[in-house]
Amino acid sequence: MDKSCFKSPEEKAGYYSRIRYCISIGEAVFFLMFCVLWHTMGVSARLSGAIETMASTSNPFVAGPVFLACFSLVYYILSFPAVFYRNFLLEHQFGLSNQSVRSFFFDQVKAGLLAFSLSAAGLLLFYFLYTAYPLEWWIYLTVCWIALNTVMAYLVPLVVVPMFFKYTRFPEGPLRQRISGLAQAMGIRLLEIYHIDFSRRTVKANAGLMGLGNSKRVVLSDTVQKSFTDEEIAAIVAHEFAHSRNRHMPKLMLASSVFAALLFYAAFRVSPAALSWVRVRSWTDPAAIPVILCSVFLAEAIVQPLINALSRRFESEADTAAIQATGSADSFITAMEKLAARNLSDPKPPALLVWLFYSHPPVSERIARARAWQGMPGRHVL
Image (tube, rainbow, N blue to C red):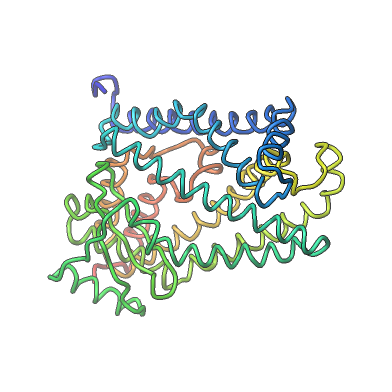
């Protein structure tokens, strides 16, 4: 894209961000319409009947995954142009992507198979609990949901991330010694730190804390290592250490579990009336799958902004802890500025977008808070 089209980097970042979120909102509306039309136009009933005839069984544990596969495939084909534009063409248009078409398609296949496997497993679990425990299924589903989320949080860095990226252990040297000192000063056991090969796909930079127990680790993109100073990397790592010290991940998981329990109970209470309204025999009828998916999507749309609000609070806490641990607001500020520039993060997004989508505070707020901390009396570099 011609840089002369924009008066400033901030204008470019805002334009890029608005395009992405407009497409995301459009995709959400399309998914809801697809589910509603699939059900109301009778496609669900006809497909369910066809599967029952071809498989010579009405067993939902067989027909359900087949129906889900057909539904997912049709939806993916219809939605692929938007996915391709948002995740590939737009990224190249703004100079953010290094990925080839071939690599993009391989990632899509892997992500699609993973998503379908998890969705099918969740569907079968729901069928089993709904059939075996007609009055208590929502309780057992909550317990299983918590257990599965805990297992997934443990496995993501061990199984999921290596499907897409290659780990490299953070090298020995002065920076690692600096990080070891930070861990000791912050009172936490030193987590293993890795780089992943972001640069094979994108010029963006990122960092995060992932995993539980002995799978917990801090992960930095190799683009951070190549473009950030040691003090900026120390500020980023201290931020992730703060998440670990303050147990932010378990707290977010607990909040999600409470919301899940409330939603499952609400689903249990309205289930008889909902079955009559959507005109299906049972929730184990494959024809009900679009209704179930639509309901799950709407529930997530209600809950996610609340989880995001809690996440933004935790991010602010981790920002402050990182500055206190490193003793340098300057390094934190320049790190945020570089992250925003590389990722084309909108520095001042509309409040509605922040509420709906942002798990982190806007970068302008994070920098302003750091500058305020820097200017407080009694602050000094350690």
